[in-house]
Image: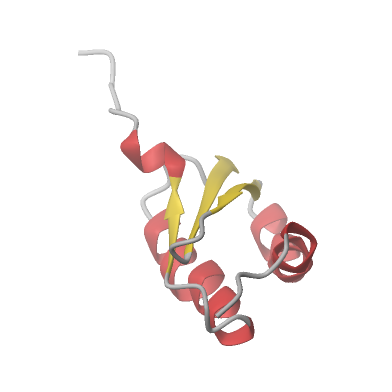
Length: 87
């Protein structure tokens, strides 16, 4: 199964962006891996938001998987960065 192109993934993300931007957030496409993983970066209000995992999985991942069955998972690259809260 072939992976979608960068432009095809961006087109789906463009359909989701208005809802993210309404709440002060956005999503950036980082990479499309051959193993079916799409890497994104949640930015703005979405970065670090407690609901960002739900947005990522129930919103972004579901939309991309529905359009492109070759996509297996969508990951936020920010989730790999340790969070510090100043204490």
